[in-house]
Length: 206
Image (cartoon, rainbow, N blue to C red; front, side, top):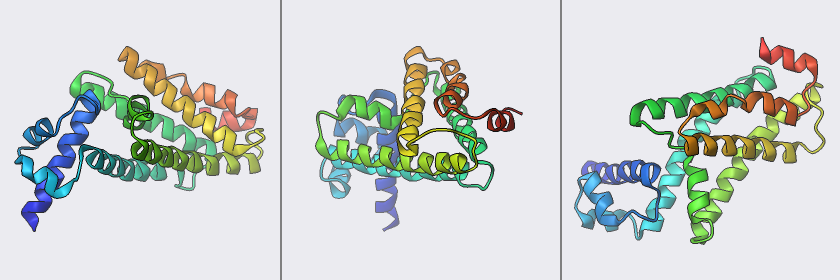
C-alpha cells in the first residue's frame, strides 16, 4: 500500500513540475513516468488519462494555495493589510521560484487557462471553480473593508473579480518578461481600484 501511494505521489509531483515548466499539451505519459521514475503501467493504475492527472494536479495545487491564501486573508488583521499580505506572498513565491530555476513560472491556473480553456471542458470547469473560490475569498475581505469605511466600491464581488484579474495579469507579465518587478505596482493599483479612503491607505502603507 505504501509503495503504491509513493508511486502516485511521484507521478503527481513529476507532472506538477513538468506542467509548470513546459505546460500541458507538449507532455506525454511516457515522459511523466520517466521523470517520476515509475513504470508506465503505474500511471494507468492511478489515472485513466492525462486529463485525469491534470485535474488531480490542479486539485493538489489549489489545496496548497488555498491554505496559503487563507493564512494571508483570514488571520484577523485589518482587511486591507490582509489583502496586501496576499500580494506580497505571491511576489515572494514567484521570486523564490525564479531563484530556484532561473525563470518566473507564473500561475499554474492562469497558464492552463490560456492553454486549455478552449480544448478540454473538465479542466476549464475546474479552473473556473478555482478562480470563483479565489474571488469569493477576496470578496469577503473587500466587503469587510467597505463596512469599516476603508474602501468605496459598489459591488464587492465585481471588485474582487477585478482584484484577482489584476493579480493574474501582473503575474502573467512577470512570467512574460521574467521579471518580478512587474508585481511591485500591484498594491498601489489595487488601492486605486478599490477607491481606498486616505485613512485606510495610511494604515496599510505604514
